Length: 225
Image (cartoon, rainbow, N blue to C red; front, side, top):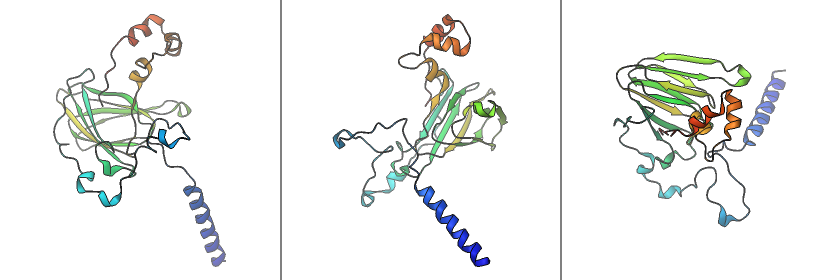
């Protein structure tokens, strides 16, 4: 019987491996329109790969993440992403590092990363953070006040935010499980799209008067990334 169980285990593992290897790589851009003409192809899933023989230490290096960023902007925060665009050696490795600077009462507005989960650690100041679950899970809100050294996780695709409730600046670092996790800031995307979403659609969605939507769409929605 032990031999039969061992063979069954091998069969299950082999089957699972075959299924896993059948999956496509996770997308690293918002969309990828298929083309038949190779002359019109720009890249595949983010970037081409360089010949490994040409790689150098600088391809895996970045300096200056210790330098505070300017938070004098409408949202009071500045996000510095070290993704594959900044460190070419990250290509295909599936990770990104982020520094976020917050002015007093500054925020990283509600947003989502469609291609990566995020783990955040506070290194200076205090942050009020949270995320909202999907419609399927009842749009539950999970929040926490974080002090220096505290860590919080934002699951992939969940709308989340950070707010600095203190009188002093705050700094956090975050890791994301993608070399290009993407960022969709909710207000910017819904109210500042190009071209604008029909205000009648948004008025009905938010259950407000159309003139309220018109006023919001006329505002400048700042991107802190």
